Amino acid sequence: MKEILKKVEQLTAEVEAEVIALRREFHQHPELGFEEENTGRKVAEYLENLGITVETGVGRTGVVGLLAGENPGPVIALRADMDALPVTEKTGVEYASQIPGKMHACGHDGHTSILLGTAKVLSQLRSELKGSVKFIFQPAEEGPGGALPMLEAGVLENPHVDAIFGLHLWPDFKPGQIGLGYGAVMAAPDKFVVKIKGKGGHGSAPHEAIDSITIAAQVINGLQHIASRQIIPTQPVVITIGTITGGYRYNIIADEVEMTGTIRTLNPEVRTEIPQRMEEIIKGITSGFGAEYEFEYIKMYPPLVNHQEMAEYVENIGRQVLGSEGVQLIKDPVMGGEDFAYYLEQIPGAFFRLGSNSGPETSYPLHHPQFNIDEKALVTGMRVLCNLALNYKG
Image (cartoon, rainbow, N blue to C red; front, side):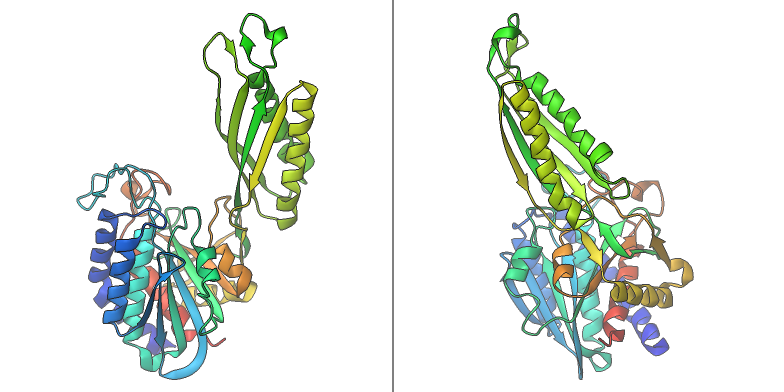
C-alpha cells in the first residue's frame, strides 16, 4: 500500500492546480438543482477526454462515468453533488459568482472538481485498480433531491455497485483533516405546512371572530412540547417554524394563517411517530377554538447512517493517508440533511467531512453568502478518494 500512497500523492500534486482552476470555473457559473446543464456538459467532456465511459441525463441532469481497472474486483462508486444555492455571494473573491442570486455556498463546486481530479488520477492508475469505479455527479442535492431520481434511473446497476463513498467540505475542520462519524451522522430534514382557518372580523370585536393568529401561537407552543415532553430525551428531535403568514391590516382579525417548518430526526421510529403527534396537537387546539386546519407533512431525505464496516474502512485509509491527527472522529451527529442517505439505504457505504477552514476567510458556515474554502482541501479530498478506490477489496 505504501507504493500506492506515494503514487497517489505524486499524481494528485500534479493535478492540484488544474483542479483548483476547475473549482473556480464552477464557482463563477453556479447552477441550481436540475439546472446543471453547463456543469454537467463540462463534467462529461472532462471524463470523456480521460477515456472514461460516460452517461449523461441520468436522473435528469446527472452524469455518470465508469472506469474499468485492468484487474478483476469489486465496483465502488464515488459521488459528488453539482448544484448551487439561491444565495447572493458576498465573498469579494476574484472568482466570485457571475450569476446574480446564485452561489456555490455549500462547496459543491469543490466536490465536483475533487471527483474530476480523482477520475484523472485513477485513469492514470488503471493497472493498480482492482475492479471498476463509478463516478456519480449528482444534481439537486440542495432540493428537491437528485439522489432518488438517479437511483430510479439505475445508477447503482450495470454494473452493480458494491460500495459507495462521498464527502462534504466542512469548515469545522482544517485542511488535511477529515471528520468521520459512525452510525447516524445526519438527520432526516422533513418539511410541513399548517393552515389554520378561523373567521375574520374587526379588531375591536374579537368575540365575533375566530382569531387564526392567536390560535397559531398556541399551535406553535404546543408543537414544541413534542420534543421537550413527548419524545425520549436521548432521541434528538428539532421542530422549527420557519415562516408564518397571515393577516391583512393592524385592526383586522385574520381568517387564515399559514405556517411552514422543518422536522429533524435521526431515529426512523421517531420520524414515523412525529406527524401523528403533530396532527393530534393541531387538531386539538384548533377544534377547541372553533377553527379548522389543513396539515401536510412532506418526507424529505432519510437519516444518513454510515455502515460500520465502511466507516472503519474510511478511518483506516484516512489515517494511512493523512496520519493519526488527520482523522477526527465525530461523536455528535448534525441535524442537517443530505440525500446521500438514499444510497446508503441501498448499499454499504460511508460519508465523511473534509476540512476546509484555515482562518477567518474560510470560517463561515455552510450556506453563508461569504462561505469559502481553503483550496488545499481539494488535494486532500482527492488523496482520500483515490486510496479508497485503489485499496477496496470488497
